[in-house]
Length: 249
Image (cartoon, rainbow, N blue to C red; front, top):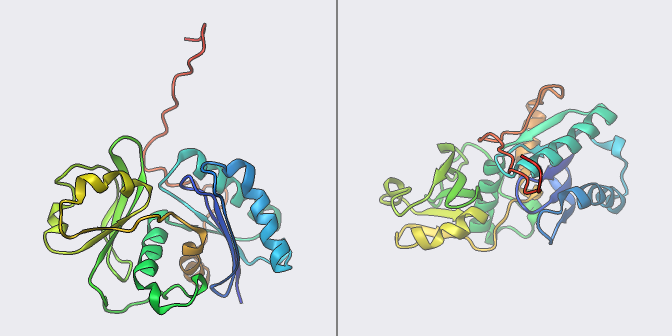
């Protein structure tokens, strides 16, 4: 039996889920964007109350590792680490884009499933629909953090920061349907929609519920992080903006 808390703060949406043996017991997600610091710990407390469980019942804590918002990732990882240290529980890191790709696959194939706790399982199987999944996270202006996965969540184009123009992904789009989703895809739709094979999932965002199958697999494989040295996957160095305060240089 495994009881795992999943924390997703890599995007403007703050999302947490509590799951036992891969099935979600409770889920909380923020409506106001970028409210991580004010709602994350409140959400976690609500999950345990709703499920009538204690923190010590946890077997592991999983956190979305990035890429994504620098501040959001710091808040999520700091919270996860604090819980792991206090409870003496292992930390599981889940790649943000991979979890999003799993969620996209669920959206496409979800008519076969009754609820979000029945997300399609991951395994070595032949692709059923032949689509490619490209989750995108906004990285400001026309740049996005993205990767490309096949239907079995095999990464066929590595995670990168990409400046999107009308030629981006043209090699893949010439041969395969590619589904785009996430807050980065929303701003790229006008540029890529002229491609017949470019398909968009609207209203899609990263969620802790999509982390659960990946965290469950890592838990059973004992793929845990070193608490002392683990850092989020920022992809790019953080550059602080110059404060606009009179008298400061």
